[in-house]
Image (cartoon, rainbow, N blue to C red; front, side, top):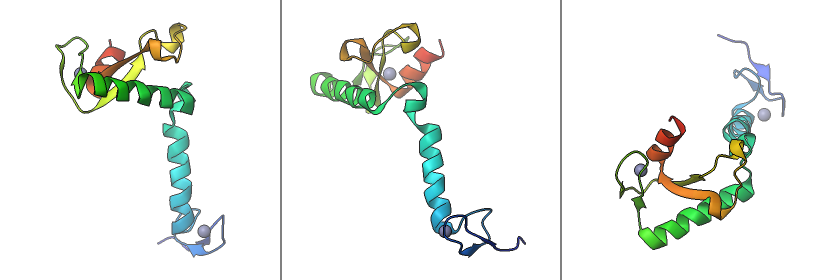
Length: 112
Ligand SMILES: [Zn+2]
Ligand SMILES: [Zn+2]
């Protein structure tokens, strides 16, 4: 068994590697956010807002319906917006450059 060590943040003795349970959880959440955050890939919060609006609009117009990518249109509640022209190819974050697909169609599109 590991010897208790002081938490890096508050100094409370803990058997965790570097932080007490409270600060471990807090730190983990921060790391996850950093690692998982879309902004790392150049998708900031402004883009996420636009994407959410595009999905919302799609929902009101078409309902829970995916237009399909490589498959026929199908019902889906797991809709996401994605760039029509990829950012890497100079596509913008504007509504006009966003298309709605379900998560699995988006994945298919990216793996093409
Ligand atoms: Zn602590
Ligand atoms: Zn789909």
